[in-house]
Length: 255
View 1 (cartoon, helix red, strand yellow):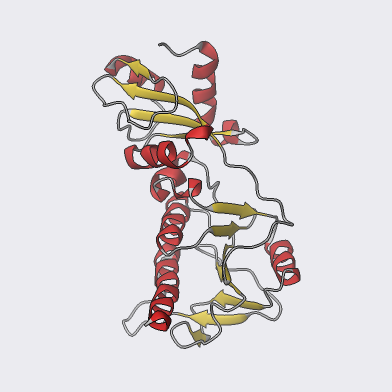
View 2 (view 1 turned 90 degrees about the vertical axis):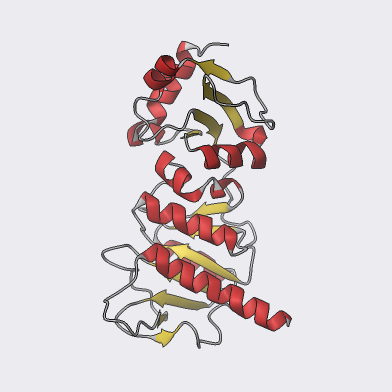
């Protein structure tokens, strides 16, 4: 089986930010993330391309296209570090604003722009047992190839919800009953390890790498105490600390 010209054109378009804008498809080239997509949402897989010598996944929902090393490199020349597999899949269904929210609290990313950070946060959120993550407009595309690799395909196990700007998303969540808004702020605030209502009908907002989270009227600032001599944590590290504080509390309550 060979790639059609239409399929090659689709792959080329998905390799650029401009080409991905408005597309119903996404492209993934990481071995682990590709296999997760194949396992979690085989119904969304449109094209599976393998370099000759790479084993065909048992869970393959479509007939794979097997390419020689030279042909594969030509097709994947825009991919940063190919591992011999490319999956083109439809993006998961968009969750409408009126859909109910899953979980006792919401993790909201406000204009987190680095694909590696967004991907790592999504992967961590899945590991911590979340079923959805919210992002504001201006965050990295959750379905870009770099975010998919960093997340190991967690996007296909989570609902990733984007419903506008920070003000719009916060208003929507407040209308759904999430009246406690906690905003991470390195300059001062309540301790995330001792704040009793951090994960109770609440929204935890993580902000942009440089500017931090936007201002939110009525929000409570929270911080991660750092006894060492450092100004702040990377946003993905901060997310890991906070999410596993939720796991710790859940486990402690179950004892």
